[in-house]
Image 1: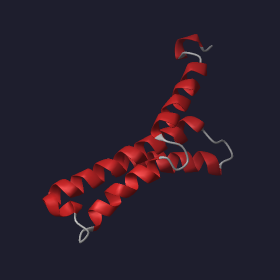
Image 2: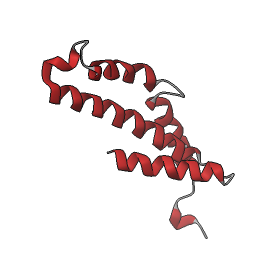
Image 3: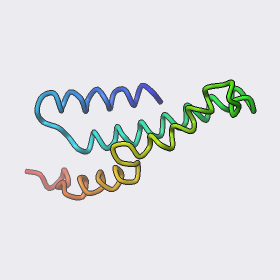
Length: 97
């Protein structure tokens, strides 16, 4: 999970650094980051059992943060729609000459 996210983030950052930002990669990275963060928190709570929801464990706090951080810089739904618009504007590979 995390390795795929790291690759997307590194490639997006590289394109931004070279002066050729790619909105599609940034959107994919944001959606993947939201998904990975939520899944990591859910896995942590599952591993710790019911104690994962108590105040003694930080896992519950991280899980609550996932909802607020999901909408920072646009939510997953916003970036999915943005990605679909980008893909719809591209010409299919078989039409490129």
